[in-house]
Length: 374
Ligand SMILES: *Cc1c(COP(=O)(O)O)cnc(C)c1O
Image 1: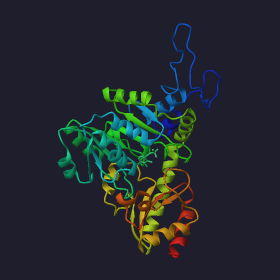
Image 2: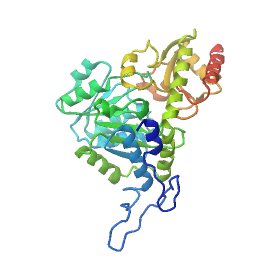
Image 3: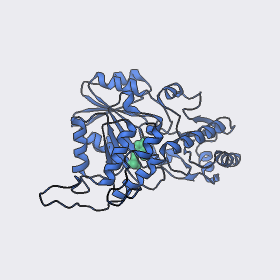
């Protein structure tokens, strides 16, 4: 099946109890035990499993081409589960431009807990090779990355990880399974913040892991989910599955709009540089063409005039909301340096844009008007 069909049908079935075409929301925290002690549908207690969560996990596993999906209450909880599955003394290699919260977890929670952590520029495969150690257990990859929308080669990084017996996990939040399938490239685990494109409407918080095979690590991750308890609510699972149904068509429009906005910005005299992998001038363009089906809905732009000009642009826009996050129907713009503080790699004149599903001409007219005023 093609991904559009999978997105509509994966995890879906007519409800056998009512005939409902749209799945009911099972808010119940607990499930009746049969007289013989069994559980008729296998569900015992909603922390351990729930019909809405099971449905969304089946859908995510199918979309990513994995054996098992494990849903969490946020992308950060999914990331944390991966680090928790390691042991003190294990070495983790992460990209120097990984999601801000991922690097914070490593620095503030897991380094004190005993993980050995190194960050490198993962576009530089020699640097990655030099940073690997005999005790490296995990190579964390994120592509496209934040805030420079850099693209790295998943297949090569997975190969390098495997050469020292480490696993390769890919944060696939920005690409989604519509644009990129890391497990097919050789990665072992995919991580998602389903808060973003998968949910797609800026109205839920969620995360997920998808494992290529059901092995000992997968069982440890499932145990962390069920025993640790950072699980999504049945309502959030229901919203997420509803979002997934339109994911391929939304991604197509996000990509088309972002490409038009990036092209417009890249020729504007008040723009220093646009970071978008769809532009031939982008450093990751060739890898993106090979590894991705399209170039995504995220871009960042550095404007002339420094921090003040960048902030002034955000004040003059009317269709782009000043807010963090991404992947919803509405376009968002954000000054990353002021969000990330002292540790940021984001230049002061950089704005990150999540290009939404408005008409691209309206977005471009809004940008044109606002740029004229800075
Ligand atoms: C948002 C995000 C996360 C964290 O997810 P939450 O759902 O906010 O916890 C992780 N990685 C990337 C790339 C993200 O954009």
